[in-house]
Length: 158
Image (cartoon, rainbow, N blue to C red):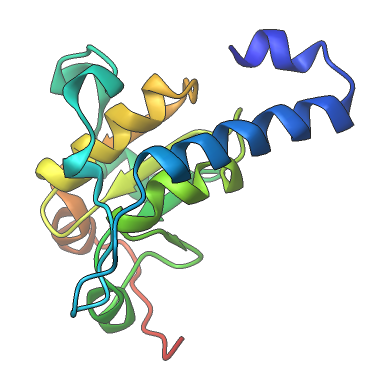
């Protein structure tokens, strides 16, 4: 899909991306619950996910700790993100992945993580892959593996 978009003028490609984002927002819109949560990636039907085994999208944490130029996406709740995250990680809670997908650079190697590299990160990764982001992977072992291997973690108030 991105190959087709690359051949379009930038203003047209932006309109297409915005239309897809708006369409997804309408399809997955749900009233906010008392805890402020909205639709979640786990609520997305399996038909909306890339048909790939978990191993095909896994990215070794040991490799990630030493590699540069990666984009990290933290899909955990805000409190967990504030308590500690990979430096410069994009905070994109599961409830926002559907709406904010266009914020991610399409050609960058992107690593999605949660606390332990489990279902939330994998489901978000498969959704992003199904939407055409080819270089999205799940960080094996999540933030806990990153820390065990000596990866830096920063805290924030925002």
